[in-house]
Length: 469
Ligand code: OOG
Ligand code: NI
Image (tube, rainbow, N blue to C red; front, side):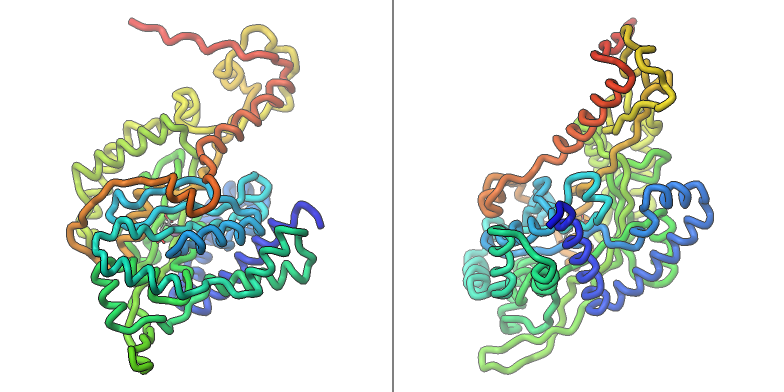
């Protein structure tokens, strides 16, 4: 069994989940076709981009889903998911507190870590855990706890296969069987496990509570495709009446893309069947499932991220986005105006330590030429060292909140309790989450040492102190 096994299982799983969700959600299938069309047009209009993607092998994976999202109800569900995703080489990265947006969950992203793993299969699952501690209604809390205690979201075979993997790994048949069983945890079943009255009671408490508690498992609520030009894809969605969100979440369009831009079409009510106290099935509707597109840019340092968060908050304060997105234009103009303050050139983003870069030595640069007091800036300026921005592989809590909100139906003013609780999340998960900033920093550091070595440099000179006055 080679090291590539987790990547292969993840790729198989991503393909299986994509097929399943396309069959379950025809609107997602339609979006997938549309996004592929728009990507093709973008490539036709930009031969340089097409050449680059072909060169690094990204062209074949263009139509492969980048992420999906699920929501679970209990610590046991979350910790078993951690073990399940570990089989596919996915580790929990990042802690996202959604309570700041009035959404009673906290989350992590199970994802591949290494560059080669991300390249082999970029599939991630944004996973949220219900926080009953943020539901003030004691009766609803108790109902939810009781209902959740009665379900098992994993098949017995799935649980058995996880154990087998943990003790001795898989053979090929077991890997294939595992994909089939793991997929079942994420499937949709419109037969609710509760009565219409219980559903309505929980829905009135918080729509998310009903979505998480009333069904057999944590159905995929969206899958996300890569858009080469997200503005073009967003316009195309609007032109085809796909009911997209009013805005693209994240930073505005820029010359140097940063972090993550994403948008989605909105969920529609779908038929479901409740099971009444007397065992009768009655039909109803539930809206939760949608489709999303994303475009990723450079990972930002803590400093860059703080600047991003501040500019976004300023734009929000100056032109608060209405729940129905009616003032999207004004908000967008405000956002673009604010972000003019964020450097939009790679050299500036590097010099000001706002983004992370992967370094490589120019193969034509001669070793030893730089042994004397060269600083990073000198080497970059002279072209001896090259810097490629490192792609942001994680998520943004404000954007995630916007995605949740636009797909849960509009709600009035929320009672906002700001209470991050990473410790409780990690206790439920049964492991600490990895720190995404540390991962980017490591990748940057790891790339620098061999590059300097190739240039024959032992120690970098400190940058020239900025001249004051
Ligand atoms: C997850 C929303 C977060 C994203 O892309 O930010 C997310 C959810 O709705 O369960 O997927
Ligand atoms: Ni998403």
